[in-house]
Amino acid sequence: MNTDILADLRDVCDALTNPYQHREPRWEWSPSRHKVKLPDHVVILPGLIAQLAELAEIPSSPGGGDDTPTSRPVPQSRPPGNPQALAAYLDIHLGVAKWTILFGLDSRDTVESQVRHLVASVAAQDAEDQAGLLDELRRWQRRAEIICEWREADMQLEVPCPVDDCGERSLRVNVAEKTARCVACGCRWAEEENPERGVYSIGVLAGFIADHKRLSKAGADRAREEERVRKAARSGRSAA
Ligand SMILES: [Zn+2]
Image (tube, rainbow, N blue to C red; front, side, top):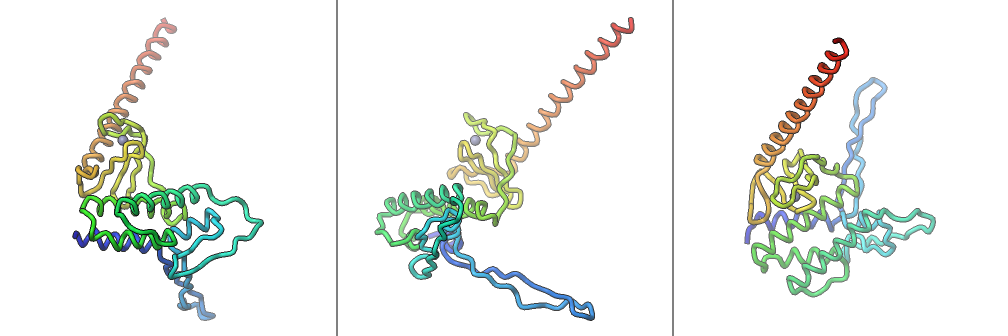
């Protein structure tokens, strides 16, 4: 068992399923104009799946799962829930069902406890499935964090995907993490490449993007130059 994958799986599983504490530091100015530290403002936030359920306004959301019951009443007068949150929440349910069948597990009563069940059983799975589950959980985490506005959506590039028989203009780049992915073909780029898992070198992609931009710029420069020559020829004729 790759202990890195196991530790990563636990971290992502925690973010998705467990409530966590957010600390906001606070200060005030004393009459003598000294900055005085106040006790941190501490809020307990539900796990990401429960936050999606809350945004989607799913009435009987189980919150953090059976061991952390946080069922919330839903007021009747609220506007319809966030459709992105609903789609992400349902996709997670579908994905969890798929992995439950693949791993041959029994079913727990909430989606959160089922995610924990998957992660707890992962040591018995082969390396490919372990890595596949980690990739999937990370996708869910990233999507939930964007919808819950904990993370900026990745930057979209106008450069076509360099993968043979893709070429779609659907690259997304995460500058902070130095990763990229193509939402059309699913290929990814990172500092550590792993072609068997569809992860290629971000350095090679950066080179491709730079080449593409240079070629596009050269094309634009050429077009401008041709236009300048045409204009000069026209004004030359009118002057003659
Ligand atoms: Zn692609």
